[in-house]
Length: 350
Ligand code: 1HN
Image (cartoon, rainbow, N blue to C red; front, side):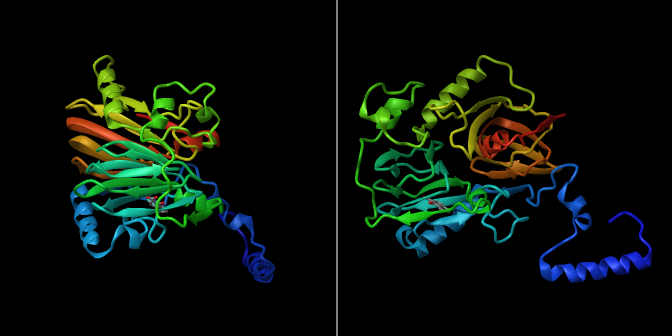
């Protein structure tokens, strides 16, 4: 409290506080300045994980525990400013998942929404309500909330992907439910690729059973690298890069033109070799993955080197600048869609 009080009033107030505490009453004027800050002061810190380091530890865990035993064999990327919270930002979770040939990760569903961004391997799938999406490097796959999902790996070699979920956000809303299917895998409901045929080309089915399927407003769940990289490369050949984003595209939910899921937005960008962005801040907390190339990122004055597969988190209102040494391809997911819906999205450019 910044107002000046004489000792007598201070003592009387302290006495009042003592008597109020058992009644669960607390004076706002003692905490107001902490509650209403002039700008965001995220408890999350900017942080960087090298893919080689994560991969080494993840493969070691693969020697010690099976995907089925673990339910999901995942190493959580824990923000150093949020210890014990299984959070990479105050609203988002990130983890790296490993599945080995012959393994399955059993079927379950929950209120949390998830995206998978494939880091390496091929031949594994995620099944969403019984439709398999076979995964290739840098594919984006969604498991929107409430949908049954299991993973399996009939192919060869380790398969690693990034899981991005809204776990801290759902925890904050006290809105989490989950259940396990009795069977380890959901019965096959549709041929792989069926949903992409219907919704993956900016079109939607007319008068078929699929048009009426309850998919809770998020029909499409597979955005292959082969398609998004082609779109981004074409764009890069035709426009001058934006000073802060380079060439950038957001993945859309074809049903409403909004973010891929209500709680998670996702996009990709390409910075030409030698390109340096301006400084940008925003209230979105974002997790970035290096898809190709190398360079560095400066977050709140701290410079971090970037190689393929590296993962970086830029918390709300951190000041971020990217530098591409070789042509730099990035994937990112964030809570931007949530902030926009709540009229809390704000950004500034320098
Ligand atoms: C989950 O369901 C998956 O389905 C991965 O692969 C990570 C982290 C927390 C809660 C649920 C998955 C998860 C998760």
